[in-house]
Length: 132
Image 1 (spheres, rainbow, N blue to C red):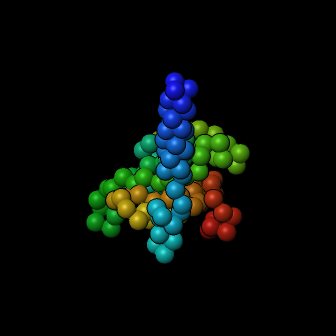
Image 2: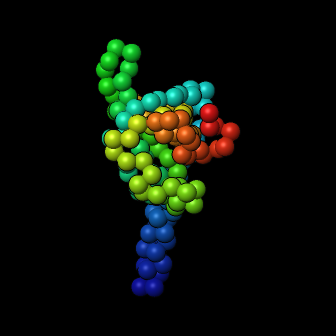
Image 3: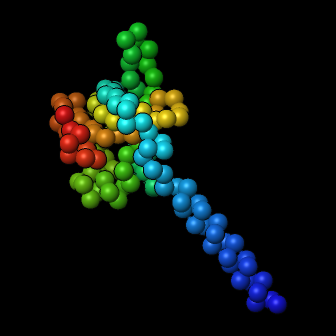
């Protein structure tokens, strides 16, 4: 009887672990809208080098002069490193341009498809066809 109790507890723990893993990995189309491409230029305010996705936050000035902070999801740090990035590739205060797609939910949130430095030099692209 005791052995069966451990099997049940183990099965529940495994199913909880698997469900949290599945929730952590979302499909692009579930979270982002490919019919809403964007291009934002701004100043880096924060870089999160965390799994499952790194994030870059930039202050963007609109046509009325108002500044809004945007959150851009990127690839995982491991993938970024394999593509030549370091944690210091983009630093607070850097001017960058980000091309990507708006989130379906969430204000001022998008996924980065390509990032360029202040001179327009590409420094990240999730797909080579996205760089401009």
